[in-house]
Length: 409
Image (cartoon, rainbow, N blue to C red; front, side, top):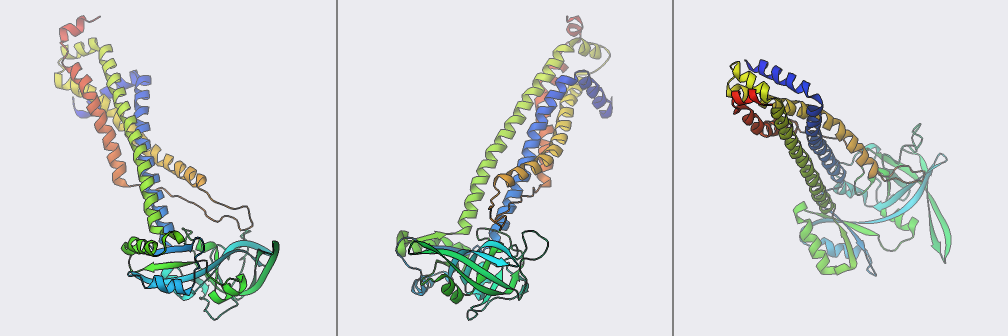
């Protein structure tokens, strides 16, 4: 018998015991699909995290005050003298309503030296217009999503248009509304909402922010280091100087932490998937062992007809191989579909939004990414485990004495 005839003979034997073979194959399918799905979702989530944090430079630290310390130019000058610090940018920010054409959107309005924004956001670029200079007290630039109308029919604001910035604060325990009109000097291209949602923000000059929001001091500062590897030494030095009076956020550290946590979770679930494959292996052993016990007379007859031990071994081993081939193949394709479902569920569960007219502030969209080698290796693993699991029952079948097998009741 050639290899094709052996596989055909084994396949017919499995068809005669289709319920048992199907259940065993399902166990292999479940294990393979879990491995592929987790790999695709994990790669997609990693790419999503990288894309979100890449919008903010890896060498950026966000510093904000805690307690009685004031963030001013003197503090910025002191921090700028720390070894490894390239630039320090002071900023003022205020959650405000921006009104245009009768429509209102909620946004974070930031006052910062805009000539230094490319240091913070390396991928920043303009759809139209340009940055607002520090001497311009009426200019404003809008993030890409902010400039789009929530209805999607026409832009919320365009270059040269006048918009109104409105915010509220309490004066003598009474709410007071402040507002000022600005001219749109620029609209940014889409950057990607990371730890700083630039696409939903508006930027004005520092002097305009101080005047509008009536603040003597700044709300915080961005510290740009000379190299991402210097982030931790600079953070440690700032903590040595100011203790707990300053809150320091490192997007790179947050990104690394998320990667570590997600890697741990995916590793745990991958172990569960491997366990399911091991359970499937036990199922294959049980299926073939039961098949051998049920077919002892048939094995004796085959040997009486001239089938050698190696041929009997090959027939039963092919049954296990077929289970691995079918289970691994179906599991791989099912896992790819399952990965899209898992990514959609993960995106929905991590979806952050607001009920205000601004609409969604942080949309999470995870696209699975599949590694061809992982898919191939998963299929090979299923086939290999099936063959290993089926070897002992196949060997037992090949060692049966034909005379005793024919006499078996």
